[in-house]
Amino acid sequence: MDCGRNVGLLEVISRIFESGEYFGALPDGVISVDLITPEIVRVTFIDKVDFNLFCEIAIGEGYSIDAQGYAPRIVDKGNIVARIGGRSDPGAERSVFLYLFPASVEAMSMYMKAVAMRLGVLNSEAGKINIEKLLRYNLKVIGLVEKYRRSRYKSLVETARM
Image (tube, rainbow, N blue to C red):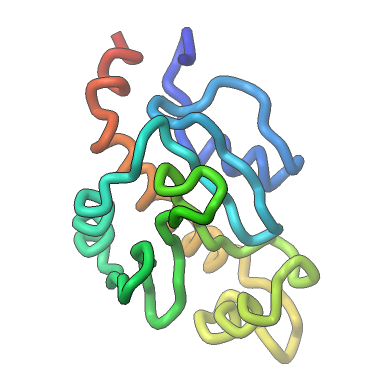
């Protein structure tokens, strides 16, 4: 637990994207935050993700849910922005995987490049990233998981503030 202030997922993930790792207090309810690839961040919670709560929050944020025989995926305009871990994933059903845009075109997979072009994050002709759109997209996805964390672990978050 953080002894001075409550750390949020945005701060942790931002530091991980900058340096590849994070050392310090983690947000309440979180046991680890890991950069899996340059585009995928895994947030592992102290207990199993509440599928119903997470999906309810996602729908409230304008996302749709794809859960056709596997762990739920949070979808925005046809692309997966987050997914709840399955039994075979490290962290299993305690994890949420976030699909974020890295700040460099070279670090993007072909799939993420295609999504970035479709969303206007990447200008295909110039090969340049629109940082404002990239940040807006990433902040929205991180905000979804942060909203879930604060809602799910509200009592922990309130206790840490006291």
